[in-house]
Length: 265
Image (cartoon, rainbow, N blue to C red; front, side):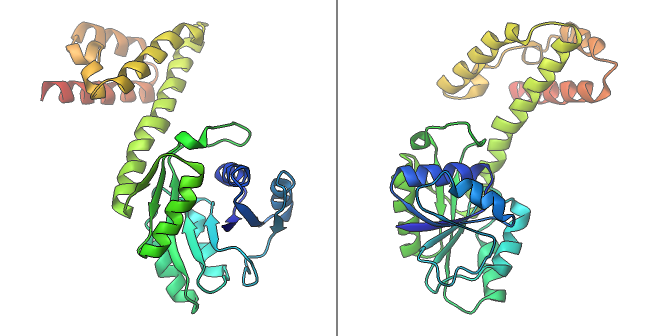
C-alpha cells in the first residue's frame, strides 16, 4: 500500500513516521513551502518532497490531507489525482461532504473519498504509541472503507467506523476533555504563579483526578469539591479571592453552576 501526505504539520510528522515504521510506502510529501517538505522527507527512507498539487503521475493509492480545517477545501479545489485514487482528510470536525462536494465541482475523474481521523493531540518530536490511538474511519464507498480500515489496522489496535455527525460529537467531547482541561490547568498554574507557589504541589491531585475519572463508570461519580456540595461559604471565599480577575471569576462561576446543576438534577 502506497500513500502520499499533503501537509507537514504535527499530524503529518507522526503519520509519516508510523507509516514508514510499518512498511507503508510514502510516495510524496507536499507542502506549500518546499523546504518544509524536504525537511520531513529527509527523515524518511524514500519519499519525494513537492510543492505541487499535481499528483496525476503518482504511484500512491491513498492521498491523506493533513492540513488545518480551513485549508481542506482549498487543497481539494487545486489537487490533481490519479483516477480511482482515494482522497481522505484527517479532521475531527469537518464532514466527509467537504471532499465530495468540492471534488464534484472541480474534478471530472473518479476519485473515492474518506476520513482517516486519529483521536489524539500531536506535537512534532513528541513520541506516541500509535497502537493505542483510536483511528476513526468514514467512507460512503464500501471498498474504500475496507481499504482505509486495513490501513488503520496497520498502525492502530483501535479502529472505529464513525459517520460525520458521530465524529463531530467525538471531536466536541475531545475538546472538553483535552483542550479545555489543559486550559484549566494553565489557569491553575497562573493562580499559583501569582502567589509564588510551585505547580508541583498540584500534580498529585491532578494525577489522582484523572486516575479516578478514567477508572470509574462515569466521571460524575467521582466529582468532589465545593460546587458539588453546594458549599456556599467556600464558593464565595474563592470568588472573593479572584475578584480582581473578571475572566477567571466568570470561568469559576460557569463551571460551578454546571457542577451544581448536574448533581442537583
